[in-house]
Image (cartoon, rainbow, N blue to C red; front, top):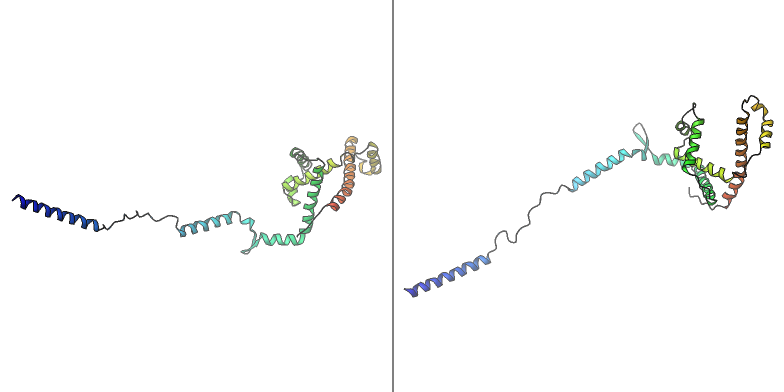
Length: 230
């Protein structure tokens, strides 16, 4: 009986080994482990395209004045069309103005003449004071088609020229008296002789500066190397 038991145990061990081998050969359905499924991404191609279209529309609406300057019965007039017409009619003149401004500022700065913002602000206040009761400075600039930046730049150029010829454009007392005598009809009703002399001095000084500037700038322009591609 003991021998029979040992045989039975051996047979059971063999069956157990066979079963284990079978289980090792059979792979489970989920082997190898599958990756967890992710939820569908919010940033799909359709979503990105829709957002891009909305952004373009918002930017176009916000900055439409950069592209369209007017609408006529639903038909747009582009800024390019306006610029093209202005360039054809006034382009050469405006380009010359810009060239002249750069030549003047470059030449005066080479001589150590620089205009500060405080000096320009003083001139702006002086102009505003003279316009009191007539119109505001903004209205005056608008009538001339100038922006505040354009106006300040003109003042910078004028102040630079004034400083450049300050000594050469000095006016003597005799010149002032001679001018008043020659234009006595203009000042016959004047009640403030000091104010008259101040006004005459400014007139004569500006005339001298203009004459000196014309000769000086003609030479500056002649010596400059200018290439136009308009």
